[in-house]
Length: 163
Image (cartoon, rainbow, N blue to C red; front, side, top):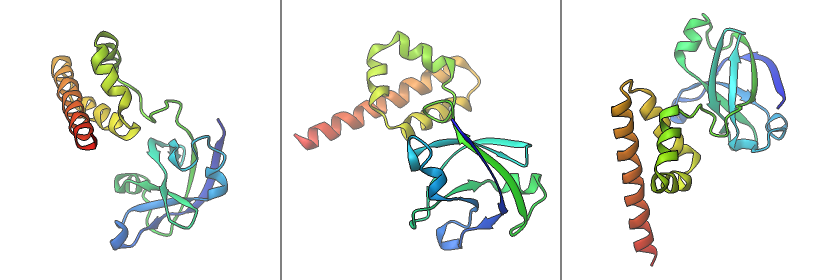
C-alpha cells in the first residue's frame, strides 16, 4: 500500500458543482490503487489532520478529494494557498473501522449478516456512521436492527417488482 505525497494549492469547485474545497489527484496516481476510482483513502493534511475520504471524479479522467471547511480553517489556509498532503489506501476495505457492536451483532444473527453482506459499501458506511453517533450500546443495536430490517424490506420489494 503506497503513500503519495503532494503539495498543491487549495481549490474550490464552482457553486453549481457544490462549491467544495478540494485537492486534485491525477489519474496516474489513482491507477496505482487496486480499486482505482472506488478506493477509500486516508488523507493527511500538513502532517496534522488525518481523515478518511473517497475519490470524486472530475469527468476528465482525474479525481479530487473534498476538504471540509473546518480543515481549511484549522490550517489557516485560503483558496490558492499551498497545502501539503499525503494519501494512501485505507487499511479497512470499507474505508472506515467497523464498530465492535456491529461485528458482534452480525456474528450472532446470521439473517442480519446475510442482509448486511448484500449491501453496497456505501450503504454499509451509512450504517456504520449512523451507529457511531450513538453512545448507548442498546440504542446502537436498535439502530442496526432497524436499518437492516428496512434494507431487507427494500430488497423484498425490489425482488417482487422484478418477478
